[in-house]
Length: 212
Image 1 (cartoon, rainbow, N blue to C red):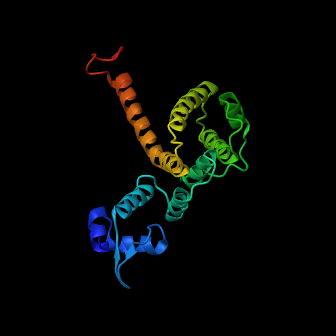
Image 2: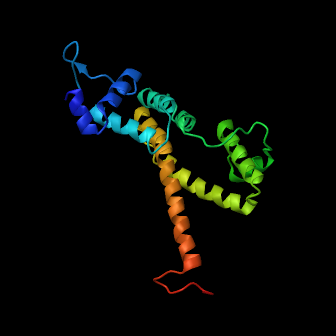
Image 3: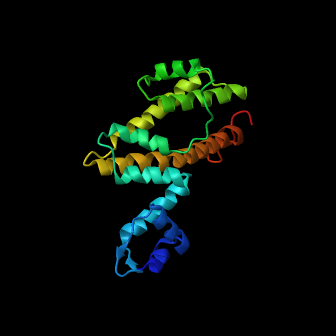
């Protein structure tokens, strides 16, 4: 298909497609002349992926480029895939250099995460420091509950990583990490809304809440 048809098929504006081509995010089409090229379904799929990373996943162009480079040229070790995926993920957490790490260290030890990398540890230190700064600290029981839930989710996710090829694995890990995080956040908020409805408004199917 011509580039104009690619724009129609993908729903991506022609000017944006040309930008992605110049920037290297989208692979070139097959040249049919000095000024013309043919594109196929692989370009449609790539555009959908780029838009998902920049849109719902919230990645910058630079982070999208970095993640796509890993997808195109995966590292040899499966375990290294997580590091690349996490590095590309957007972080809304401040620096943790001057924050007290004692609380995070204790949580990491209790959860059995002591062998994990410093970047995610630093993110946890900063996040917990933010809670303390807002005078909204979580107690150990709350943190352990979250850690247990996250471990259950992570174990299930990692168990599903395909091992037939590094390319399949990196696509699953990188995109699963980046694209599923907004899903987890949305599901948490939906669950909170439903829990609040049951507790404070009563369940319409079961009658009013106790004490109402």
